Length: 296
Image (cartoon, rainbow, N blue to C red; front, top):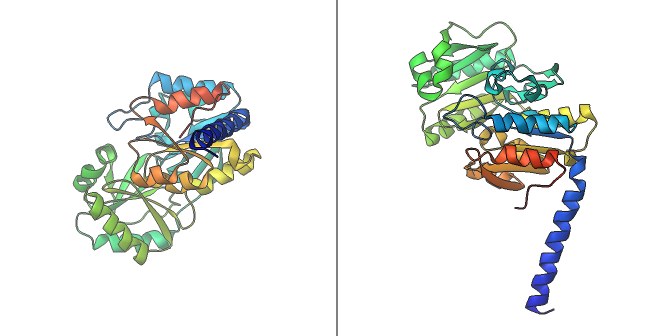
């Protein structure tokens, strides 16, 4: 086959593949997106009206849609200005809380003994600390509020010092470190060796998410999809960073925004524009219209 004919054949095949995906787009029944850096620029506290409109379009089209975020469930409503349709379905605290149609259908907790072990390791690390959450309240179990502020100012603004790991079941725990990527990665490597009962992910320098070993956003997506009785191919997910990696690599129709980490881009099947340019809301609107928005 000549080069021109081969090129034409490849272009035709690509078009056929894309047409097949477009024909199947009506089968999309669940859309989940990370918040920070994916639909919410880091310098803003609420998503745009365009984003909320896109969520409504999907909701009205009969698609379950919501965030898949590291934030606890109580910290999500304000991001959407308490527009309940935008978070009636969501994965909160990196999948530790699974909510469907406004109802909590699954909640995981980090084992208490593992948290005590983790706190003892963190205690020996200079300029590092550990916070557990009681609803929206950040409790500083190890470290100082000043060092927390260097990594996550909004948590530090209302944080409270406590003397020990809380006795109640803990859903969300974070580690804070000096806000340097290499230093954070070094500390995570140490924690993975010392406290293997917990999984760790890095959404940004200076801040580490924790979940029970084997549980993450990907596992929570599976749980939600199975509850809805839908196949993995009927799910679209969006993300940009370390706590999205398992989800992006696991879900067939995973999408990374421009500006995502190299690891997130490599894990994703599809790639779109930036958070700042409202790329995710634009893609969601097309999905709600029965159009396939992804080409590369």
